[in-house]
Every structure is written in C-alpha cells, then in structure tokens.
Image (cartoon, rainbow, N blue to C red; front, side, top):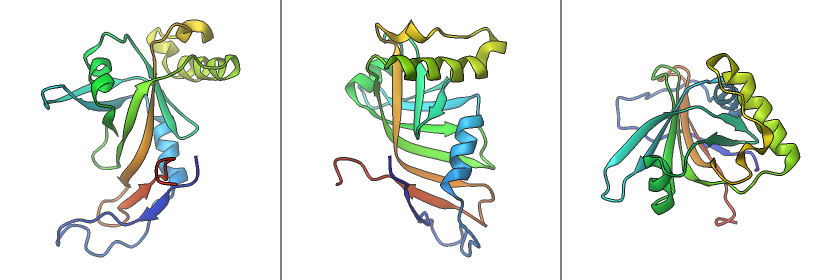
Length: 168
C-alpha cells in the first residue's frame, strides 16, 4: 500500500483554526500497532450503527482481527463493508474509515506472523492463536481509505487519504 496523501481535515470555523503542524503516518501507524483495544463501527441492515470493541493487530497498513462469522458485526459487513475503526482515546484521536471483509486463508508465513503478533499482544489475556486457526475462516481484514488523527487537536489535526485500486 503506498503512503497516504496528507492534508488538513475540514472543520467549521472555531475548530483548530491555526494548526501548527501535521502528524506523520509513522506516528499514526505506531499508535495503531501498539494499541490493544479498538472500536469497530459497522451498520446494521436497517441502517442503525453497531459498535463493538475488538482485539487485533495492525500489520502492513491493515487491521486484522478474528471472530465468528455469526457475530452481528460480521453479518453487518457482509451486507455493507463500510466501517470505522477507532482507538480509545479522544485526546489523541485516530478515526479511520474504510472497508472490512472476511479475509482469505492466510499464506503460512503470514499466518505465523499474524499469530505471533496477536499472541504477543493478548497472551496475558489468555489468547494465543495458532497459525492454522484461520484455515477455515474467521479472520477479517480492515483496509483504511481515510484517517483523521491528532495528538493535540488545535495543533496538528491531520487527514490521511489512501489511494485504492479503484482510484488508480
């Protein structure tokens, strides 16, 4: 995935009128990589939002998480893949828009990398998946399209836009 385009998010007058700097994508990616808790918001078939906390890992500029295809959010993304992914902090905010879908069976090397990353984060919580755990499904991948982030709202609100295959 190529580096995202960086710009300033558009806010109404009075919100961050004179920002002094931009965040780097490296800073945002580090926050996403280090986080243990994420919030995923999908849309129910009747249009109502559905928000759920997720465990997962941010690898290669994508967020991978697992779970049953029978959960509400999995059924939602099957009908409408457009979701938001957010971290817990409102002070140092990361608000991502993108799409989520059931992932294909991961290649063995990537499955091992994924299992190591998830186990490294959540083993203390009793979760250490095996690399073959997703051979029959249950793995999901979120691909970002846009991200708005800041570490100090009035100082560095930054918008990142990812070019997708559809746009090229």
